[in-house]
Image 1 (cartoon, rainbow over the protein chains, first blue to last red):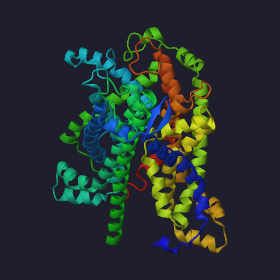
Image 2: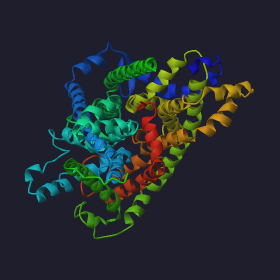
Image 3: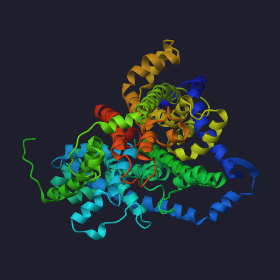
Image 4: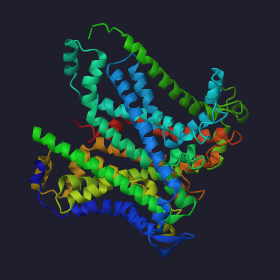
Length: 298
Length: 282
């Protein structure tokens, strides 16, 4: 309520203006341009005028486009629940001070902070057909696992998913641990007195306590997987073989910068922006509603 | 807590996934740290074997291939981005938290949305526009993009931090006749070292780790940034064969990781603040 005390001041614009101008130039301006691009025909990087939504029609009749969208969905379904389950288990155990927990928190943080390019490049070398992972499987006598993990059409997407789970565990773990440290310990102690087992504490205290954090994680991760995967995919598979590991973001890159199909690429871009916006506003309004409810309770 | 802890079966069982995951991370660290110091002949035996050579040649070669210049360029861009996002982002956060003006909410939502918009969406239209304006292959042009990309999250962090301030402090300063600019520099900023560290940490790492913007907007040899340069040394494509200069590329990877590790070692606390500010509040 403190906010209402603020006096109306026009100089707010002066404080805001520099940042606003830069952000408008870097975000709003290109997105408006992209919308216009998506309505035009293109030849040699030059627009040839309005073309009756042909770019959108081309997109909707392009089988690669649907494959790309379904890859997006598969990645999200493959990564998000797995990371939640693994990170929750880890978080609960670390919160319970499992032996070695401080070393583990330190180690698990490493994949999160390493630049995407570094992780993707090292993993590419590890997963190489002639790389150490296949050597390891052969040494174990598991020759049937000696596969071209990034180069086989049926495998590349799976490999990307597993490597993304591997990279993102630490991020979710950090969020969950940060929330757990704010939970009142006495709840756990009370449950212990009542004879609750470790599993019961996990399912009936930890998970409900973390529900809102989990939903924050889901939103952040889904947006991350849809919109910020370029360098990862570019280094590991370049969307291939064929289109087998291409996601919408990479599809836009391929169309605009590689195939010079600017119109089609821009139309795909408009679809990504619409999906992103729907996500943000749902998230924004959900958290607003929650904040309002919290105020009422107080 | 003098009570002796009993280790349960469940805890022992849980050690298995903990150890397995740690092992994979250690393998990656081993490759990152040791590969750059191995000779090409040694690397031909495979990357995950005990090294039997020790050389600095890979670093020297990588330097000859432009790694040094790339580090200088990336460092310049990262530091300038930190400086300007701290200043402009701080101003904007101040406006959103302490000043009232028309469209405040709408403008905040606009600013906030920028956090989630894929860089890929702005890449092509900006690239074509930059070509017309002659801003491709210009440090200023790239800096402007990085500022735009990093400002939304910076403003978000500043605003969330400032919202926790007692408004009485600001009002008191106003009654004393202080102008907003003075309040910002004399009162708000000195109390904001924590959030400033968070903003700097995130923005430095983001610009330093950038690949796409550098790849498209700084193509000239003398302007290339570190990640595109490393990929360039590797031979830039995916699916690199053993014949490529693996050691050199890994020298680049290791060098590029050092500032990141140093920063996080110094400021892990601020990283967690950044992740949780506003999102994990109970």
